[in-house]
Amino acid sequence: MLEARKSRGLRARTYADAPLVASFGTSRTQSTFAGAASSGLNEVNLRNLNARRTLVLINGRRAPSGTTFNSAVDFNTIPTANIERIDVLTGGASAIYGADAVAGAINIITKKLDGVEIGGNYSITGDHDNKSPGGYLMMGGELGDRGHGGLTVQYEDEGIVHCSDRYLCAQDVTWFTPDQFVRGPAAYSAVGANGKFQLGNSGPFYTSRNGSFTDANGALIPFSIPIDGYNRNAVRTLAIPTKRLMFASDGDYEIFKGVSAFAELNFGQVKTNAPFEGNPFQSTAFGNLFGGGVGLTGLQDSIPVNNPFIPAALRAALPANATVLNWQQRFNQLGNRGATNERNTVRVLAGFKGSFESPLPAGGAWNWELSHVYGHTTLSSVTDGLVRTDRLYYGLRVEADPGNPGQYRCSDPGARATGCVPINPFAPYTQAMKDYLTDAAGQHGASDLEDTNAFIGGPVFNLPAGPLSIVLGIERRSFAGFLDYDDVINKALVTGNQLADISRIKTVTREAYFETSIPILKGVKFAEDLAFDGSFRRSDPNSGDKYNTWATGLVWEPLSGIRFRANKARAVRTPAPDVLSGNAQTFGVVNDPCTTSRRNQNAIRAMTRT
Image 1 (tube, rainbow, N blue to C red):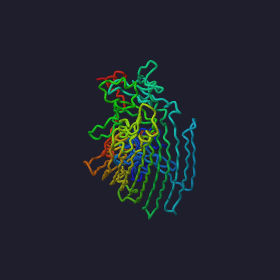
Image 2 (cartoon, rainbow, N blue to C red):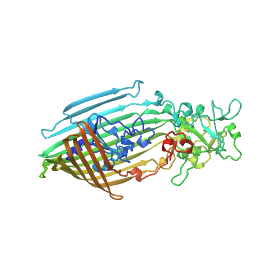
Image 3 (cartoon, helix red, strand yellow):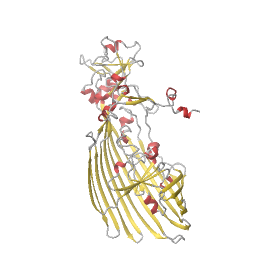
Image 4 (cartoon, one colour):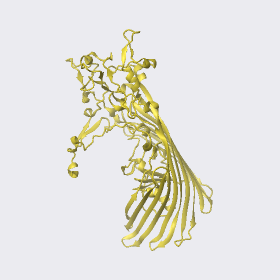
């Protein structure tokens, strides 16, 4: 960004150099449960306003999205070996760099190497995991006496870290109230590995221990979380295995005096594998219903009371009016779940730039640039360990097989014709049951970014503190993307959220912008530098109304090396395909601190009570 503003003829004054950018957004240590399509992403989230509100640039020009449905950039696809530095601007910057820079902008400046550089690395934790080998090759040099070219190839293989190997997450934890921290059995999941069953549609759940549903006194065994709960963290990952192959090249060449052509090519391939625990099936939960859709409730995979596998102890306790048994079970017997993703991102940049002596009163050089960026990202994603809710529904409806005395079959003739296997949830699952119930499903998609930008800028006239400079520019930007889910996900035929496809939608925005830098004082007592920066951008989207973004700022340097900055800005984010298309089931799991049962336990309430 510093380079970008300097090339426009403005003084760079509102940016901070950073040797690296911490990943406060999604990362391989945080994204196991971000959804399969987002699993393994490495995004930056300035000011905690979401990664899609942080604009990412490479050498002052846009980087393509790491997803196929919004503008957030995946830093996994960017080689780190050739990074010279990272500039960060926090605060709204849409007037300068266009939409999406609501929280700020990050600019990655790459190295200009002369020669060859080879590097390798290997890291391992003190617990002998997270084994991560990697290496890179960089080369670059002059193209005669009129240009420069460079090439970088890098590979990184980041290893797995299991939660079970760290005290931090080896046991489930929860906060029931603001001051009540619980770790261990009391915090385990209420969906246990052994099934728990309700005698009808209400009442307590009962479970089995050591193969029996009754205790030594012949009484049914009530389900107890500390005894029968499931420790999810024991099979979760603290860091997702990630393989990264990255390629970057750049070049510039002076065609004739004052005019140069430049180009950049980037490619990144990222493969991730995010294993986690088996599905927490609950027969009445929306994410486990068979079928359904918008405005339609699916069928519950409850157990009919005529199921011949119901143990005698449970059957004897059934109410006379009971028709089904509701039940819950952690399907770890069927295998763990896990999202395996492959993302491929390509970025191609080409343009021309130059400078000329200004005829205006301030004199000096004016700079201009015309560039075009094309970016393309693809996603192929598969989740293993899903359970077919349609097969479970029909497999729980069982009758005696008249052709095989002592054997059972599925009651529905159509299900039998497609290979239905009777399901007995009261005992360990047979291999035939596992093979029948489990399935893999996923999603695939692609996105395209195009950004054409042209600007000219430089000093206009001189003020006592220095030249007043301006920039005039125009930009045309488009983003299109889609995400296509497998039919079994669309139709709620597998456990998990029912999701509609994100249709391919293309947003196009045409913009004109103006920037200025006005020096006020310079080199005087208590004002080594005092200047005003302003910017304005008029945007015309292909849908919706035209809008304006703007920014004003004052920079004051009272003493050399001490600088204060005050800014006010209006910034926007362009709607992406994921907010313009598709719908999905969502399930809230947050304990609301403002509910009646909790709000009086919050010490901060006394400070905010009205």
